[in-house]
Image 1 (cartoon, rainbow, N blue to C red):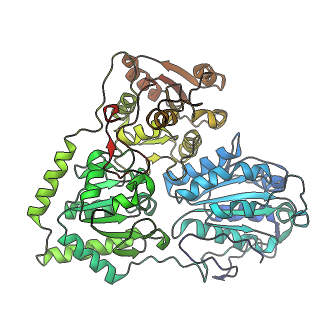
Image 2 (image 1 turned 45 degrees about the vertical axis):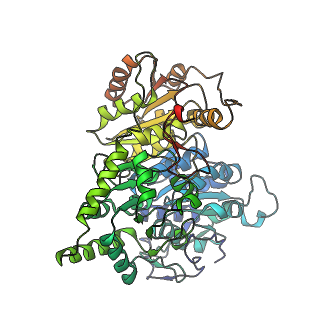
Image 3 (image 1 turned 90 degrees about the vertical axis):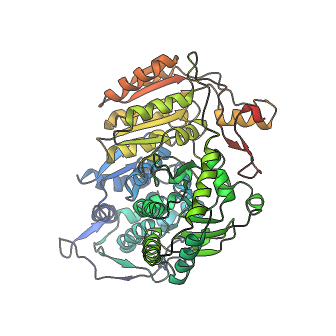
Amino acid sequence: METAIATARGAAQPSTTAENSPSHASSRAGAEFTGSEILVRCLQREGVKHIWGYPGGAVLYIYDALYKQKDIQHVLVRHEQGAVHAADGYARATGDVGVCIVTSGPGATNAITGIATAYMDSIPMVVITGQVPTHAIGLDAFQECDTVGITRPIVKHNFLVKDVRDLALTIKKAFHIARTGRPGPVVVDIPKDVSIASTGFHYPDEISLRSYNPVRKGHGGQIRKAVQLLLQAKRPYLYSGGGVVLAGAHDKLRRLADLLQIPCTNTLMGLGAIAGSDPKFLGMLGMHGTYEANMAMQHSDVVLAVGARFDDRVIGNPKDFAQIERKIVHIDIDPSSISKRVKVDVPIVGDVGEVLSDLIEQIEQQMAEGRKPDAAAMTAWWKQINEWRKRECLSYDKSDEVIKPQFVIQTLHELTRERETYVCSDVGQHQMWAAQYYPFEHPRRWINSGGLGTMGVGLPYAMGIKLARPDAECVVITGDGSIQMNIQELATCLQYGTAVKVLLLNNGYLGMVRQWQEIEYAGRYSHSYMDSLPDFVKLAEAYGHVGMRVDKPSQVREALAKALALKDRTVFIDFVVDPTTNVWPMVQAGKGITHMLLGSEDL
């Protein structure tokens, strides 16, 4: 089988040959199926219930096969980027593999941003792309592009299927690679002639790839070292990221935190792994993290990093971070993430859930034998943390005249905290306010683009989640710049009855750009002011939804309550917020995480 292979992060490249279990024969013995029919059967065998896409010439045979079946619901988006984001949002909320389909050429290139978004945040997806017939590849055929070459840097793996006999096995490999180890998107490029060619259907129940075997169990010796460091620590700190959420290991993380009574922080992608109401939780850390979370990170003597990667938005300048001596234990499924930006003392490669289980077991055994953390040291450490907390870094000036964006988020939380609520955000100031002011009690409820920082994801994310969780609240927090990136998907929401709530924090600017220009560029607001915004209420109504405009603080609660009461309607609320409000705290680029601006008075 000819395949095009992209590098799998932190693992050997999957082999082009596989050792498989005995094939599962078709129910029609000896029957042949087209490649399109085989693809649909493969998706059914993988339990796929929803697929987002946009048809085109290279995938019409596949769409014809989808038309003839009832098990998989296809959702017609209005732009291919929306298809990938919707599948991505579905995967983030459920933990299942998200699936989308686009045609060749511009269909595939329109999907690139969505694929890169999923790749940066390690989201399991299978992206089916159409391709020109095999005999036309490389001849600049109509709507041809080198999808394999273009996507190679932004996928966990990709395949070009040139023989219909390889298709079923390739799909099995794609799902296996996408969901195992460090998850990620896998692209399967299917030429049009492969989609119509016929062969027998055999789909393996299991698959084993010789050169792709992610490590799951952590090294026993390294775990013992970690236990000793944690029990000896005088200022320990538990720092966890999106890897805990992806692994479904939040219960174990919380058990460990309770066992050690250790202060905790989450990254932007890890919010909800530790309950927002837990007194041990210091809030998010990093560029817009809390004062206490950043100070504790910098002044700890032992850091336990779980499923996080010490990225630039978390620790700031690595040289500044390294000035204070500390011991670092790093647990991650991906060996390439360990010691990538920060030197680690105890690396533990493995599934974070399994490693945490072993860690907890050994700590409980040590404690049963009388070895416990230094109680006096821990009392002093918590006293220092509570002193930092007294700075109340998330306080802001309330107003009866203009709507403060933080107030909108806090009111939303008050109205939804007792419900199953998924909060999807776009990227910008509104994203940071949501992360700061909406305490997440559960994992997979906070859906946003962290690594790539993609504007326009919020609405498609919500569409994907609402199909998976129809009885849950699904709220989009967005800005006037971000929402216009994929606002056409309001039509998709109407067609498929995905009743989401869109909360636009409208400040008339590209808010985060404006904030940086105020601080770093002496207030030179170069092209960050949006002076021709549409009437969003009329626009929402034109798409068949409910539109509201709110410009007074006294109207905020009533508008939110009314929107949430409309269970079967998509509601778009245009909140006209204070255009001068900035996100505080803030660590400027190139600074250390304790060099924080807590407000405009620090400028």
